[in-house]
Image (cartoon, rainbow, N blue to C red; front, top):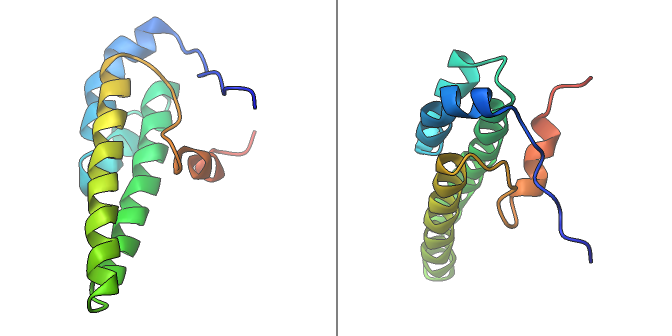
Length: 114
């Protein structure tokens, strides 16, 4: 299986929007880079990934209310969500546009049509 290569973006775009991309991984704050930097490929890439992560965390929260099994799945899901959030923040801080494991593929559904 071939490893997916991270798309390249202009270094000026990365430097100008790095903070917005990082902030976007904190819960509903994915809206910040989406609205504040609509023309930034870098910020939009990370905003889409954090949107998918946010949706996954909402689903995990709904599962959490199921007694016993939902608690176990919910706890594991929140830990996985935290790990993915940290990975996304590290990628954004390093100026890398690398898809997050498991959920990164779903972010492509939110890409604008060309």
